[in-house]
Image 1 (tube, helix red, strand yellow):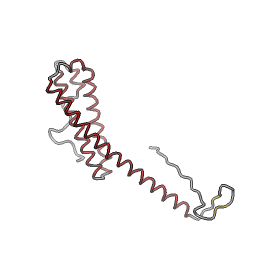
Image 2 (cartoon, rainbow, N blue to C red):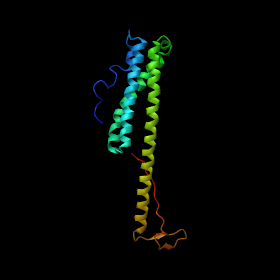
Image 3 (tube, rainbow, N blue to C red):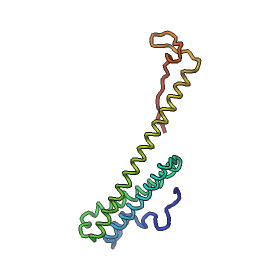
Image 4 (cartoon, helix red, strand yellow):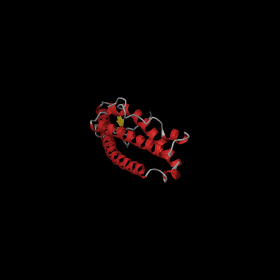
Length: 170
């Protein structure tokens, strides 16, 4: 799954901004390229969802560059159509319907993907909390001296307070 897209399922040959700047490219071609970009990003999200459902953390992390590339392509395509919004009115009605259907399907795939991302986030938070609590218990179990709030030595492990913090430095 982490390999390059299958033949015929790769990024559009020309991104939409290039299509918008190329003389002679009509709005219908720009819409077709937008549909191709949306379908490509949709496949990327579907593959990412599969990785999440398989609980493949390493594969998920390795997949992010491809996801970013597909996202940039989609952003460029949609940006080009926004710049040509007046021309869209004159586009082929069947093509506009196909674009709407592609966007509707894309929205459904995104919803499923976001649910799986949220599940992964919750699992990661739970794991982090478990590790943190284990570290606190290990620190409390050490035979160290600590002073309580009133300045006296705390003798029981439960009375020993351990200060912890989370550093998100990357």
